[in-house]
Length: 485
Image (cartoon, rainbow, N blue to C red; front, side, top):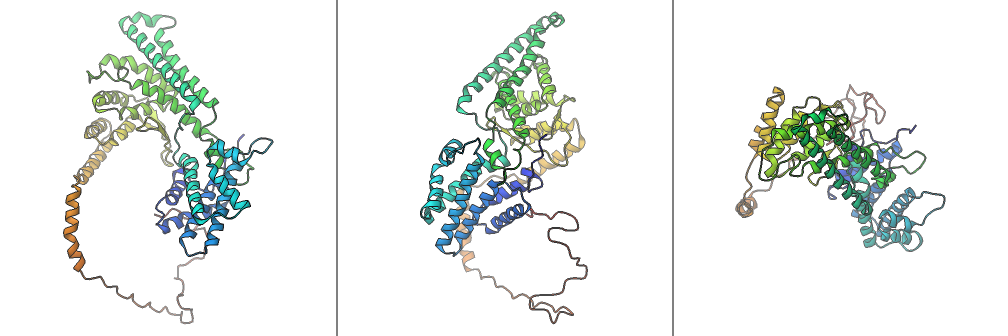
C-alpha cells in the first residue's frame, strides 16, 4: 500500500502552487509580488516536505533580489554560487539511482541539464567564484530549466511530446485507428443495407466495435510500458530527504489514456468520417445511426471520450462548423452520458490539458452542459447562438444566464482604433497635461491621543477592547488566508 505524499500546500497545483508560480515568474520589477511569493515558500519550508525544486527556485530568486540592492559584490557572488551549487546538487541527487553513483556530467546530459551549469557549479566549489555576469546568466538559465521541467508540468499537466523512438509507433497507431474506423463504417453500411446481418452469431459490426475498444486498451498499455511521462517533474517534486516513496502516477496514467483517445477523436474528425466532405455541409440522418453505436460503446468504457470529441468538434474549421454543430446537438441529446468534473480539455494544437476538479463540484455533469460551455468559449457568434438554443430547450435558468452573458459581451464589444488615431489623440492631450498644476499632497492629520496611553512609547497605542490574543498562524481555529489578491 502506497502512503499518500505529503505537501506543504493545501489545494495542490490548482491554487497555492499556481499562485506562487505566477508570482515567482511574473514581473521582476514587482518586488511586492515577488516578496509575497517568497514569503509563502518560506512558510512551506517551515511546514516541511517542501519540494526541492520549489526551494531551489526561491533561493535563486532571493539572489536576484539581493543583487538588486546595494549589497557588496563579493556577497552577491557568493550567494549566487551557493544557490547554483545547491540547485545542481539537488537535481543530480534526484537521479542518482542504482548501486554505483554516476557522475554529475553524465546525469546532466541524460536529463537535459545544461553542462555549462555543471561547470559553473564546479568552479564555485573548487575554483574561484564565478563573476557577477556569469552568475546572473547561470541563474536565468537555471530558472528557465526549472520552469520547463518542474513548474509547467506540475501546474499545467499536459501530455508530453513523444520520444523520437516512439514517433513511428504513434504514427502506426494512428494508421491502425483509421483502418479500424474504416472497417467499422463498412460493416455498419452493410448492416443498413441488410438488417439480417444483425442476427448472426457474431455480427461483424459488433466485432468491429470491440476491436476499436481493444485497440485503445492495447495502445494505452504500450504507452504505460514506456518510460513514464513527467519523470523529471516527479523526481524534482521530492523533498531533500528521500525517505518516502515516489508519488503515484494516477494523473499521468489518466492523461496517457486520454492521449490515446485523442488519436481516435482526430481520426473521427477527419472529413469523410463524422464530418461530411467539403462539398456537403449537412449530416445525413443515416450517418447518425451509423456512428452513434460506436460512440456510445466507447463512452461506456471511457467516460472522457465524448467530452474530448465535443471539445474537438468546437475547434473544426468554418467549412465544417454546421456539421459539427449537428453532431453536438445529437451528442447533447444523450441523457445517459455524464462528464467527470476533471475531464481533460482538447487544445487548439490537438494536445491535452489537465483540468482539475473543483472542490465543490465533484459529481459528474450532463454532457449537454459541457457542450454549452465549450460552445460559449468560441469567439464566433454562431457558436453562441447554438449554445443559447441548446440551453433554451433544456434549462431555463442556464438559458437566462447565457442571455445575460451575451448582453454583457455586447456592451463590452468595441472596434479597435488605428494606431495613428490613438497617437494623434495622445499628442493632442499632451500640451494640456504639461501646463496642468502639479497636485499637492496634504499632510496627514495628527493622530488622536488614546486615553490611558500617555506612557506608551511613540508609535504604540492600546489594543481595542474586543482584541483576543491568538497564536501566530491560528485565526479563531481557521487556517490563515495565504493567497491575498
